[in-house]
Image 1 (tube, one colour):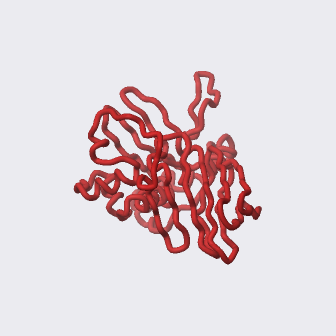
Image 2 (image 1 turned 60 degrees about the vertical axis):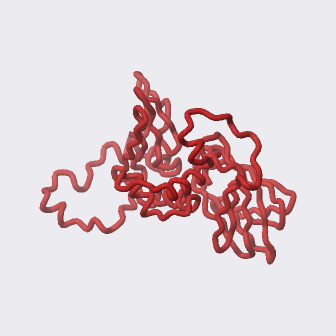
Image 3 (image 1 turned 60 degrees about the horizontal axis):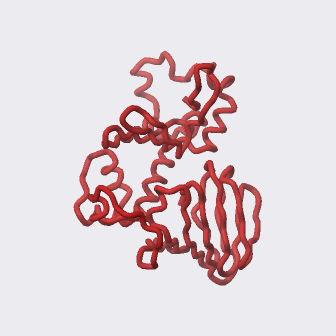
Length: 267
């Protein structure tokens, strides 16, 4: 299913990453596909895809067992597969189906970078194969912008001002990411401070539904959007939609520092 439809079969919503649907006693949050993967297959849905018989249709179990399932399926239909988190009465269940493994690993890696835990451990945690000890739970909560006391507290006053000690810093070999509002994942907007070393590239931001703003505080960077390369110097800004994948590159001989804001959160 690529769309939700009304009684007249009119498209009312895309089932893409970031969408949240209300269901009885809870909600369903879509993890994949990305907007880009969705759009590729949606354009052909009523023709090539909807009326096409799958290659493995009608095959015997014996024949299917002979398939090489270690080879990654990079077909457009597989890349558009839906995965989601279903929350009902306080319980969260992760449904992956045959979703793209790279997209799942990306989400795990993002949390791993913030919490200083391994992707393997987080994967086991998501599948309810292990439970975090106090130390691991503290790391995860810090990455999500909260702490043990606030996590177990039913309600708290919303934090408005964030100090340097509240920032979460992720240091990589070529760049440093400062999450200056560490609990921004739950908000509509997420700001970061990104420092790129000479010759370094940021992580690629894949296509998404939303917009981004950047202000170069120091040095200069090249904004790469699709096939376009746009230079942005100190005290200059950029404003883009998330229709295409993009990243920042520092082609200068000095560090570059950028205030980068995304809505919805994608960093």
